Length: 135
Image 1: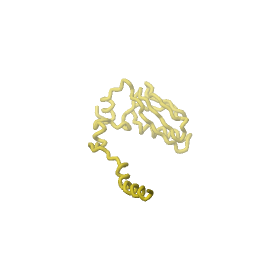
Image 2: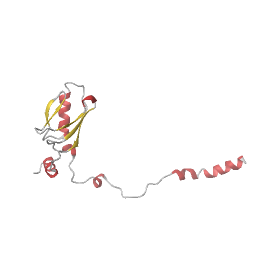
Image 3: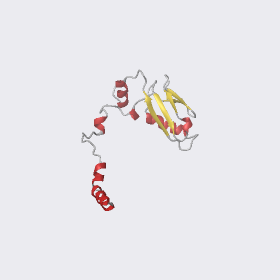
Image 4: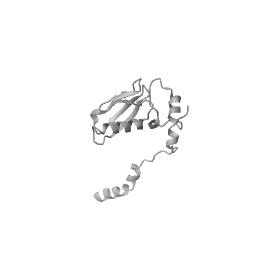
């Protein structure tokens, strides 16, 4: 009996790997340019304005991380920096400004600034024109 069981097991062994395989359904191969709208502005180069909400992440000092809204005067307040004029600047410019300013208090400050919400009354075509320099 045990010899018969061994033969049956050996007979089914080649079938096991094929039964576990899965094949992805064939479909169109979408590239990034087909998924994202071609005319959407790059968020990193978008010009900021009053009412935009920014998430500031300070990896080297997480207790400083916070969400701020650009005030009507175009400024944000952040610890150790004083008021920062952000309106009319890009996210990359704000990141660099925060790094430079926080360097007096922190060693190698690692900062990210993310646009978490645009101003409610923002005119999207206007912000696109500002970001590209077209008016």
